[in-house]
Amino acid sequence: MVFTGMPDSAASRPIVYVSRAMAPIIPVESPVTGHFTVSGMAKSKIVRVVKIQLKAGEAGPATVGKDLGPVGINLMDFCRRYNAATEAQRGFVVPAEITVYEDRSFDVVTKMPTTASLLRRVAGLDSGSPRPGHQSVATISREQLREVARTKLPDLNTTDLDQAEKIIAGTARSMGLKIKD
Image 1 (tube, rainbow, N blue to C red):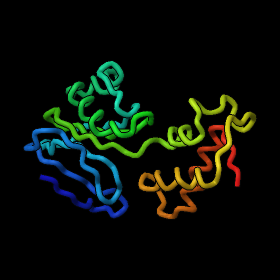
Image 2 (image 1 turned 60 degrees about the horizontal axis):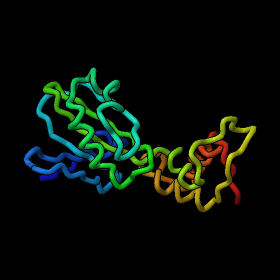
Image 3 (image 1 turned 60 degrees about the vertical axis):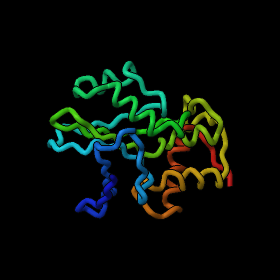
């Protein structure tokens, strides 16, 4: 059973709840933001919210243990949920927001891949420039920049595609990418 709701603040993104009665863990995509939510709908109060960036589909207890171990959640359960939610986005770095409850249950919300990983994929690079502003590593077209902006639009603090394009262009410049018109 899936419930969606809007928080009190209109600036916040919608909340998607999934009941614990579901046997397999199935990622649920929010119809408004496109974020994936895997939830246990805990009845306890929120103890902590942890934000983490991991390679999609490659989470393991060794990679998340340092960050999530002190929180007290089941690391294997988190890895299984995160990997299921991000399997289709392999090759990207995908941020996740983990809400930890008093009874050690947790919810996982995945976001869109990071802007840097989207730009690296478009430019065909492994990393950005070691000296941005002095040494450029690649050139991307305005159309490629617009496509990345379209992809990241749900996570940005604007709804205007032209403004989103300017935000993404700033990230591209800071990585040592040139934009051709």
